[in-house]
Length: 392
Image 1 (cartoon, helix red, strand yellow):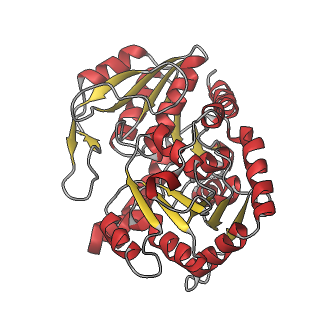
Image 2 (cartoon, rainbow, N blue to C red):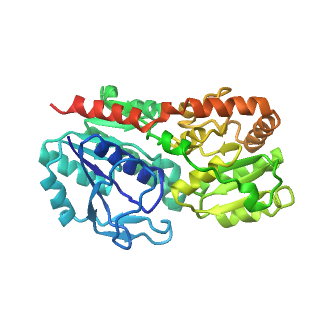
Image 3 (cartoon, helix red, strand yellow):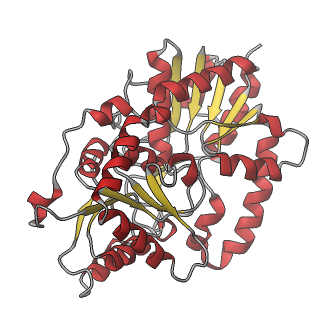
């Protein structure tokens, strides 16, 4: 099939969305499909470096792009909302049989237009819980949420299929659909390169940080921003009395570094900053436990990656968490409510698992041995089956 993927962001900006698009494009290309990615041009105009996804590099149709002031992280480029560009003309000549949008906004509207022109079904993957980012809008958060909700409902109506990366989000979308189309919602998480992760050379953080060789190290991986709740992870590790490796960067980093200097954490927290994805995963693999506190995810891709690394995951219950972490099997899921005491509950669970070497080893083995349930091959099978059901 000829598959057009559209995305509101692109590598080298690293996020769940950009990794998902790259993973899907390469996996489909490896199976012989023709893939074109319509996305905003990177700042330097270069082709993005690989992030570890297996398969051939896709062909890109680059949209003119710009950097949002203040709120957008470095390297995040927005597509200029022009009705027609060379990239759009390239996408039209591609004559896609499937158009798969990974954003409902600027490139989503482009995808809708291209799908209609080609007579192709429009598929949309709902990667982001947009309401959870309202704090960036200040006093406009309330009106912005209402407008976004109305817009999404209208956009969904143009889609032949809606993909949700978790069962929680799928049920939420089905409940919000205004018509009788719940069957158009499909759960297909982003796949993980399990074989590649298993082959990583683990990086022991103790030798770099000077921590004791027998220290139990907790890893966290992700953007350091309020919606990801990284402060809860630091507070939890303070309760647990363990060592913490914080992998990633973002607007909350300075605040988190200040928290790490307080007496209950001093000397037990190391920040790596943003790393290339293969390096980040190799660093995760060198830890003993993985902590996760974000409650704004549609999947929590890092949970699947950490489990594939063989790390038991201790996570606050939230969207997508139980699709990855099997409570008592390869990790522990702690209640999110009441909000007061959430970090303490996470810390208590981390301490209990750290103190039980046998249970921790058994969970690590199950996490590693059962990781094929997250595999890219499995997710690509599901994606291909969806596409074929839509192409007449």
